[in-house]
Length: 439
Image (cartoon, rainbow, N blue to C red; front, side):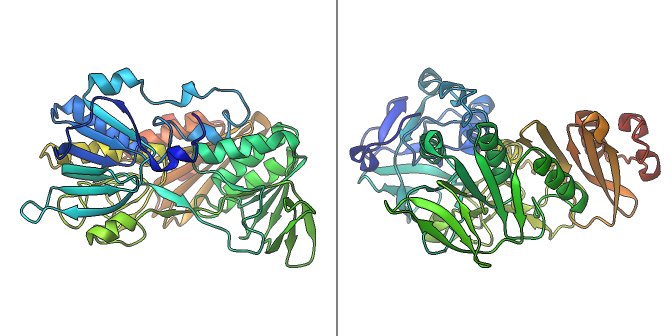
């Protein structure tokens, strides 16, 4: 990964296969060189799609993995090349033109063939296509407070964000992380391991409030406090304060307290990138609305990954229940369904969502979706470093949060995948292997 220069900001660069000749349409234009965009291209080639593919990204980097940015890469445990998805030779060999550092501002459909059209890049380049896929992901939610744009106030969504943060780390003593979600806690734990004084300011009453239940949230609060993080719940930020040089020096809370910081990292969620969908007149509602085959409301545009608002893929879910998921697993599996749609096969996205988050020496693995649970079973084996919460609805297991408990995670994932159950009464005995209870 490299930092883009000013000249590069408006000039796309190319890698992989040769681009189509001027005016010649690519078979498929994938806007978004993301996890889902890369997976879509790879899946199509595996399925026998033989038309030219253009994979277009708005960063000046080859497509890369993002999860390590807040952890191993930030701590210097892995290098740039280890994050790259594919070599340039791969794109050449598979007839894919990779366009970097290009942003699409407008798309015009072909009046005779609504599947086809032309995308207009900010660089002035045009990209005619026969079919279109929007794998455009999401952008960080901005913190709207005075001082929110000071030098030293950073976000962490992409490689350039990570490069900016990493450059600030050596000179910083104190870091404030705004947001107690996954990204915030992962980065906070990493920065603490790098020797920084880290304070986490969470607006809500608990950590990871949107993703886990009360018991899991309390577990992470205790574990992070024990490891040395300063965590403030229900924290209200009034202003980010500058020093005499105009750099950030502190975060002032509404109660008047000032928390010292030379870095303020904002991690308060994301907003789906729906701008191009709106240009095309697609249905938008907390993302781009798609059906079970990854098709947008026009019946032709392919959409997958973080930006897609889809029918709940968990087997047995109500027909009208919809969800937008932000995970690597979802990006991969949803892109595979999108590839089938482009090949004319109506494969529905149906599966068990799962997710992971590494925070210091704690690996959280989540299987299923806990929405609508009416019972929980806590398997507290913290003396052995393991902790799990199982979620039930009407006596049927629907999800689990597993901290350093991979066997519990795998057992619940297996049970959900097979439509089986795990007895809540028997699961309460932490000495019992969950796998033996699947029935």
